[in-house]
Length: 454
Image (tube, rainbow, N blue to C red; front, side, top):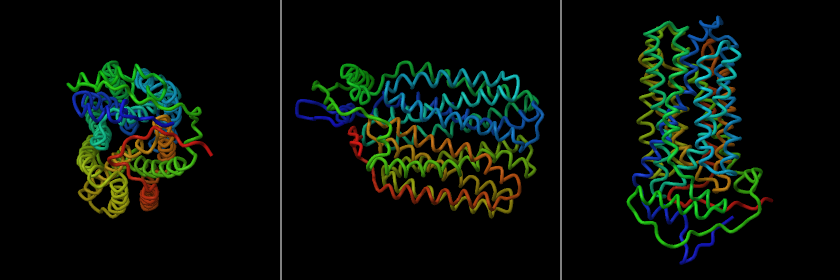
C-alpha cells in the first residue's frame, strides 16, 4: 500500500507537520500518560501486594502461588497485546483505545473483591489481557498524531509516565501499610490502583481516531474531520487540499510481519523486547521481596522502591534528548549496555548504600532503554501493520515477563550471581539485536506501504 501524492493533494505527514505541535498533542500526551501510569500501577502492584496476599490466603513467601500471582498479569498482557494490536489495525485505534481501558478498570476492581486465590489469579489475568491492548494502541496513536520533528521525544515522554505510576503505587503501598495490616491493605491497594484508569477513560472520550489509520481503511472524510479537530485545538488552519488517499492493495495479513525486511525487523525487535523485559521484570518484580529478605522492614522497602522510581525520571529525560540528537538506535543500544554494566555493579555492592546506588543506576538505565525502544518500534512498521507489530513484539515482552518471576526467584534463593549474569547477558544480546536492525528512523516520515508477501 502506498499513497499517490501530487501538488493537488496533501499527505497526512505534511498535514500533521503543518498543524504543528500544540494543545492537541500535549492533551493527548496527558490523556495517554494517565492511562500509562495506571497500567504501570497494575503491572507492578503485585510485588507490593504479595506480602499481604500471602498473609491473607496463608502461603509462605516464595511459594508457587506467589509465582502464579506475579505471572498472571503478564500472561494476560501476552495474549492481550497480540489480540488488541490486530483488532486496532482492523477496526481502528479509537475502538481499542476505549475498550481496553474500560475492561482494565472493571477487572482491576474485581480483583480487590476476590474471595480466594483462584479468583484473584483469574482477575489479574483478565486485567492483564485488557491493559495489554493499551500499549500497541497508545504508542501508535501518539506516533501518528505528532509532527515528525517531535515524534521521538513525545514517545519517550509517554513512556516516562511509567515512572509516575511506579511512584504512585509505591507511595500508595507505603501509606496503606502504615494504616492497616497487610492482610487488609492489599485489597485497598488493588481497588485504588484501578481508579486512575476510570479517569483516563473519561478523558479519552474526546480523542478522535488516527487520521492515518482512517485513510488506510478508506474513511477519508473521517480522517479530514480528525485533522480539523487537531487544527482547532492548535489554533491553525488545515490546508484546503484533499488528503492523499492510499492506493488500494491486497488485503494486509498479520503474516506480513514476517515477510521481507519487515520480517527481519520483527524478529530482531522481538529479541530486543524479550531480552529487556526478562531482565527488567526479573530484577524489579522481586526487588521488594529481595530487600525484605535482606532485613529491611516493610516501610523501608517501600521508601527504597519509591527512590528507585524517582531515579527513572532522569533516565527518561536524557533518552528524550538523545533520541533526537544521536538517534533512536544508538540511544537504545547505549542504555542496554549501561543496564548490563549496572547489573554487575549491583552484584558487587557490599553495603546498603551501594545497593541503593547501583539499584538506582539500574533503574535509570533500564527505563531509559524502555523509553528509546518505545520511540523506535512504532516507527519501524507501516500503518496497516503498526499496532499489529507493536502488539506482537510487546507480546514477546509479556512472554518474558511470565518467565521472569521464576528466574527472579533466584535472587531470593542465594543465587544472585547466576541471576544477574543471566540478566546482564539478556541486556547485551538485546543491544546486539537492536544494532543489527540497521535502520535509523529519526526525522523520517511514517511509512504507509506494506511490502508484498513473498
